[in-house]
Length: 222
Image (cartoon, rainbow, N blue to C red; front, side, top):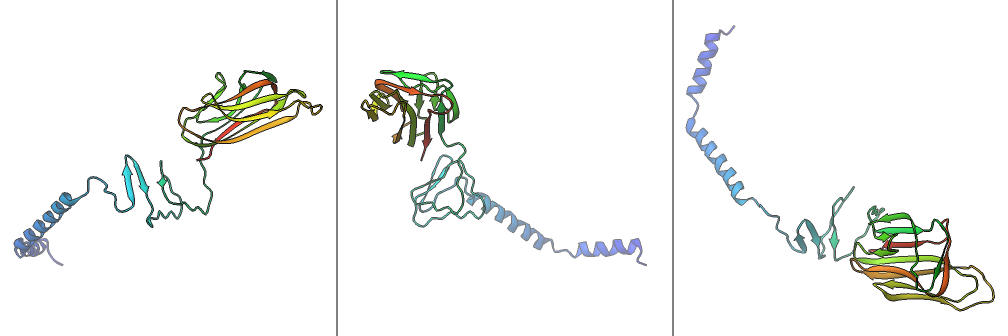
């Protein structure tokens, strides 16, 4: 059995034989490598070809640049000039959208705005039941649809207004039959932030019925 004294002597021999110059050389080499990494490191992300960085947004301008997401791609903003091909489902839970209806029926006379006092959805907060207007919170192309009823067989004129100016019109002459027939208006409009969309009866009168029979919709297409 090796004694403790023998082990101490063996260890002392190994220490005496250690080449301290080689050890110091290696330490110096490692220090220089670390210093080089610190000097050459990139403090700011520098874009390459077809890539632009504005604030916290990284954008691709085409030229064959590809983002390959095998599973999920998660980001606050994704801007691209080129096309996006998706083999799955794109969901946008915060996409601007509103749907409003009436709690009670209401006769809308000439010169009056349509009033929808029951908000079903209001993602983005654009529709206001006090002003009876939709104020655009995000710029883009919007789809709007409104359903209302003729007041018996009478003539009517209804406008969709953007910032107080007529954008589209629905008009019907008096008829001998038909009664309270339902009418629709559907438009696509390119809006800027704070543009105001209003439904207004211009001539005669129309009716908004309750229980979801008359509704006003808006959806940001992109």
